[in-house]
Every structure is written in structure tokens, then in C-alpha cells.
Image (cartoon, rainbow, N blue to C red):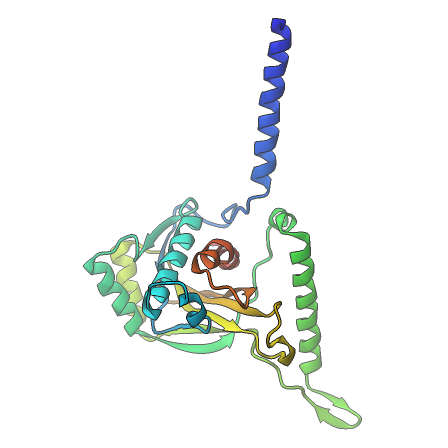
Length: 279
């Protein structure tokens, strides 16, 4: 084969490789672009083991040689690990899991001891990066738009108004509320902040997997689903709430593979959380 023909083939192969790599990279979600300050340090606080709910536990343990608490700790560790890996390139991160010492355990016990929980309206989510929106699956976006429109209609319907000469108000569901933490001794956060040079505390407040039971026709339906929700609060070093809300997605009702939950559904919930902790 002539040398010039070989050179052309090699050049075409290189170009083909570059195009494929570029195309692949554009399908990946970029959690970090332009949303963080690399000079800041954030401390990840995993959810308290007591604030955990999973009504699919029996199903998930059917093929596992582990206890309820071991399954909970598995999810606790894996969620923290994915969250850590998702933001480590964008800011300094300290995790009680990756830095597992007696001091860490003492600090986390101190933090748990000064907080309580309350249900309050979730803060408005930050708008997504336009590039990220394009990358999301078309049908997923359509479904989200439909659900968002339904919530807006329900909000309008719930407003107090006069109907046929009578005051009317429809009861509002608490779907837009999240489990927030209340800090009772801000000086504890301030002391930990000074000692560890922390700028922000990201608390994971509750890990919840719960069946969607409001539709009676879902019983026995192969399309039935559960809702996977993680509540979070972001506080600054002075103990002021910066942002609070939740990341959530739906999972198949019959999902029993714990690793599939971690692999397939954790990233979407983490993406929603990270979207709202830009600073």
C-alpha cells in the first residue's frame, strides 16, 4: 500500500477517535462547571442513622446477607462517597467518612447533638445550566415539565378566593416541603469552622425511599414506583442557612438490587443537590 494512502488512513483514524471522544464527553453531566469556588472548603455531614426511612428494605434484603442497619450504612457511605467525588474537583472537601478519626467522630456527634428537625417549604431550585438541560433525556424533560405544570396549577387552585359568593381554599399537599435542620448552638459550627478552616457545612438530613401509595390502582401494577428523596441543608460557617431543599427521583417499585439503586439513581439526586449549592 502506498505510504500516502497509509498516512491518510492513519489521519482518518485519529479524526474518528477524536470525534467519538468529543461526542461521548458531551453526553456526560458536568456537575461542577461554574458553580463553585475552588478556594472554599465544604464539610460533608452524612445523615444521622436515626433519620433514615426505606419501605423497600425487606425487598432489598431478600437476596442479601446483611441486616437493616448494614443496608442503611451501605447507602449512607455510598451516597457520601458519590457526593464527595462529584465536587472534589471544584472545591476543597472534607468528609467524615474519608477522614475517619476519633476527632471526626467527636465532631459529628457534636453536630448531631445541637440540631433538631422541622418541615419547611423547600427553597426555589437554581436554574439549570442550559447545556446540561440539553443533555438530559428528551422524554425525562417532558415528564418533568408536565409535573411542574401540574404543581403550578395545583398552587393556583389552592389559593384562597371567592367561588359563588363563598370563600374557597383547597388543602395543599406538603410535596414542596423538606426536612430542614435547626441549629441550636451556632458556636459549635463556628468552633469547628475555625479549627478545620470550613466555609460551608452540607448536611444530608434524611434519606428516604417510600412507595407512591396515593393511587389505589398502583397495587400490583408492574409500573408502580417508589420515590427516592434526599433532604439537605447548606449552612455557612456562622450557622446561617444558605440553601435547603431536596433531590428526588422515582424508582421501580420492585427494585431490589441495592447496587443498581446506587449506580443508576444516586447520580440524579446528587445532581439536583449540587445544582443548588453553588457559592
